[in-house]
Amino acid sequence: MSDGLFPDLRPHHFCVSVPDLEASIAWWRQLFGFDVDFRFRIPHIGAKTAFVRRGAFRIELFEIDGSAPAPSERLNPNSDLREQGGKHICFSVEDPQAALEALFERGATIVGVRRGEGPMRPEADPRLNAEPGRQPAMAIFIRDPAGALVELVRRDDFGD
Image (cartoon, rainbow, N blue to C red; front, side, top):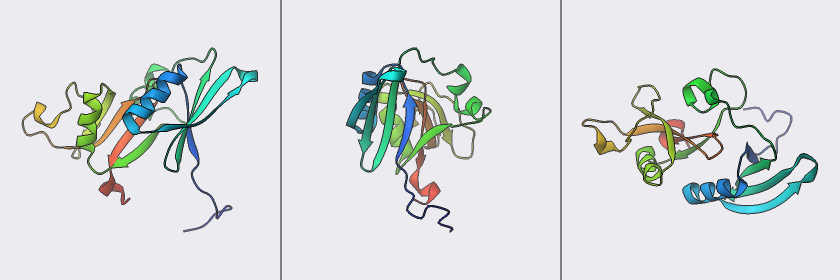
């Protein structure tokens, strides 16, 4: 593998524009265990900002006066892919089905579930026992309070 131009390159953060900074901080804390790393303001653009962190990974949350909500086509993983640009953040977990059920129990907005080789589909009740013969989830998409998509995949599927 090439080191490209920057052999010391490492991921630093992912950024999300949000309608309510405090609600977003609470969401990332409650569902994924992120804690506030630091906060700051950018007065000339009317931004309140917080970095939340879990381990070495950070998410930057911006609340900007007058920002527009995400368009409806960006709120679904299948239609979002039809528009170019940034898409979603993804985390790997050992057991996506267990993660899905924990998120469902906490009221997360679940917008897509992939089981086996089938397509990503929304499910009203994604629990394994809600449908006879249901396969465990391999990947899921949820939506944060700002409409940003968050994916969870099975760790073994991607070699982490």
